[in-house]
Image (cartoon, rainbow, N blue to C red; front, side, top):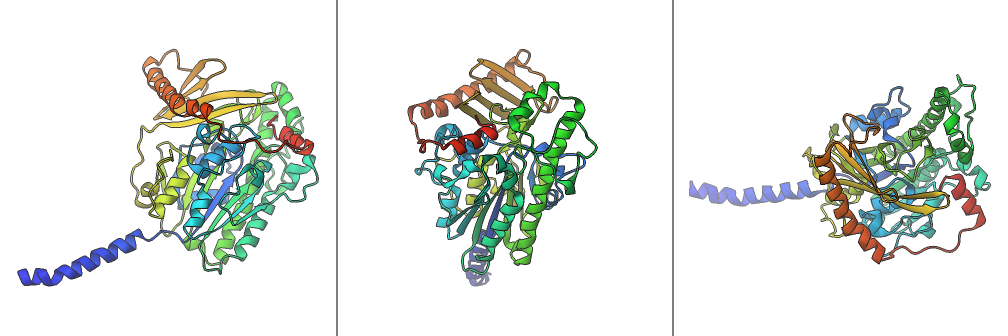
Amino acid sequence: MKKKILFLAPLIILVFIFSFLIGSKPPFKHVVFIAIDTLNAHHLGAYGAEKSPSPNLDKLAAEGLVFERAYSPSSWTKPTFSSIFTSVYPSTHGVTNFDRVLPQEFDTLAEFMREQGFTTGGVISHILLQSKFGYDQGFDYFGKSFEGIRGFKAIHADVSSSKVTDVAIDWLKNQTNGPKPIFLFAHYFDPHNNYYHHEKYDRTSWYKGQIVSGMDFQYLNSIVPSMSEDDKKALRGLYDEEISFTDENIGRLVAYLDEAGIRDETLIVITADHGEELTERGAVGHTKNLYDELTRVPFIFNMPQKIKPRRVKEPVSTIDLFPTIMGMLGEKIGSEMVGKDLSRAILRGENVPAQRQIFSEVDYSAGRIVAHKLSVVEGDFKLIWDKDRKAYELFNLVQDPKEMSNLAGSEAVVLTRLSSALKGFRARYQTQAAESKKAVAPKEESKDNLEQLKSLGYL
């Protein structure tokens, strides 16, 4: 018996080593990270929208893992992408105003992927993500879909999802037969204001009122108080048409992965930088609030051969993306990162902590917009602190998903617990940020760029 065991021992060890090596092999060869600017999760069929405008995204969600309660670290583009790319809060990287630059000292997701041997490509469609703001760090190729636009008044017409997909596919065609794995960041812009009509996805032909395709954003906001319910429905119809147009072109990108024969070995990640207010609070746009219509975003992982269809209800943050990719590649998370590695939940079906605290912040002051707010989500509750008004808003997100009933005066125990969490965040991150100005301002913006920023609602 002893001899038999001794004889089998080397074989058992070899099997163990082989199993370990197979188990540690990365689950994907390529990564396509799709980010859709200004996409409110509630408007996708995968997140409960009726008459879904997003069949391609819904299909990717149905085949993959959907985080139902994913939150953005801020409510506008620059701080959010800076946080997604670095897995630190806006207070830490310092990109809190439109004129700030992502500092070189932070390691980015693209830099990590390049160090892992990936060829890295980025296709952007927003002037705030240009190279001069530091977002090209780690990319071998960093292309714009808006080269040669006809001036700031045409930015929404010229920055198009079809162009993003065209540029992305052109780049992929030069990479798919290469020796290196691929990391692609594809950024789609169309759901951002202004909102344009798309006949193919018509939701507004029934309407004859004051809301029109491509309406100037400043003027649109000025007429919100006078809007009828039909006006608001038409506005949301235009927004959904923009989502449909984007969805169609994301479908084209995924179809190319099939055509190129790399779909089965490609991890597709889908999220948004933030959502959009569509008159819920008496205004249209984003930047100045932290309610769910701005901070609740889609977060989808799709790779049918490796990821089983599943929906996760526990709250997570999009700053978890970087450490999750690291976890999938078998790498340890950097000590400076605040995001969590969700790879075990995605690949093995493990649970996500239910009582984790998820923070979002906005610290913005430019033109007519001033906003200094901080929020935390824990379980069913969300607390928002408005620094300027020195006021709390507490919501039960299950009983009051639209965040209309402030419970700060009636839920003393919850208020105490979550306000303590916000105070801890401010002491750890925001005080530290005030003492260290990490982000440096670029050269003075041109008149044309300032007009673009104004038209986009940032000034």
